[in-house]
Image (cartoon, rainbow, N blue to C red; front, side, top):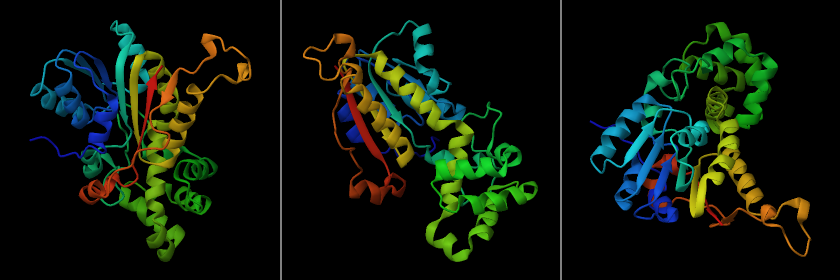
Length: 307
């Protein structure tokens, strides 16, 4: 039985990808194949490459896609290596790429993964269990100053210093997710805890640091743009402001004339914009989708097209 996962902004993403029946597409975060199945249905003469660090997701998506088509290949790797892996396979250009940056419902709900602050489990939070760094090793080995920094930068939590101090003082006693929640509660006080949910922000910060999520995103987007064919598209779904700011900044950079030649009467081709923005403002989930899946409420979809 397949784990249930609700693919956020699925219809909007598939429509925006502008799929060709003989196109080559990449689902850089294939997860449980919600988007990938729809792509395969629409490109019977094409091919789909999928990436995911999570071996469970790879197996589940393999089984799901086999029911649709055989025109796909799934790679158990971080999408940071997307360009290198596809280049080694002889794939230089593609017609479209999807990045769904949220983590899946099965990952959240499986307590042994340690992503949820509502279920007790080990302090893991790795997308790829082959990686050595876990949330627990961060808590055990980072200084109080380092913890404060990641909680503030990646969690945008105003009480980062107070929380980091309490976690650092009690790190030897913190072995599970709910033990961490209790320490956060002690640091912030019950009223602040229940009104502002700092545990959500601290878990987000630890997950981002564990998986180097923002650094990976900054690396892969220029690679993805370089791989697009003319009129090819990239769709990116983000779930928090830090991701969205990076996507917006990089898309803006490649959609504008290079600063070095702005104002010249004639712009050399190598300095012209590489992409155009399909939507100046991000697409958001409908009220109906949010009602069906509350985890979609913060999702934003940005789309670009290669010129």
